[in-house]
Length: 219
Image (cartoon, rainbow, N blue to C red; front, side):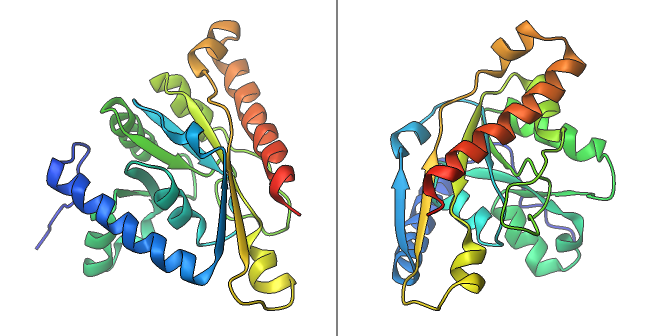
């Protein structure tokens, strides 16, 4: 039996349930961690949007989905969709599959559809979790999706959770810092530069912006 719980248009009942889930998850997170959010007012954006974040921990998607006000859609590696129960769970939570072994045109098309339906999509510009303690090189997928949709980008940096869980002495309720940056107007960006050059420059610009934000909270 094939049940597809992934929708690009969500009902008012779903949005109410989403807020309820956020409320519960927020309680759990604040029991486990001390959460500090900087510039949260910058996250209150209406309209199609790309939310991008550095990626050091498996908890990063949870933090993105929790502390951005509305529902966030995600690309998730296709291997997660093999099991019936888990596939339906993450589809309900707005995830769709991507093949990370190459350029997945179907996933890019789905991302464009999601954004053009007025939604927010969360993307890690590094493509995968960073193996070190510094933000890695950005891939071009985020900039390509921005070019195809004209969606603005909201950068969001999260403190290095690897340090919280591995590199330092264990503490009760370690602190997690989250900071939101300024909206990047991608349409204005691509008016200044042609497609190929603009995609390269936007990819680098986003990573540089994330590094600056991360440096403000990594202490």
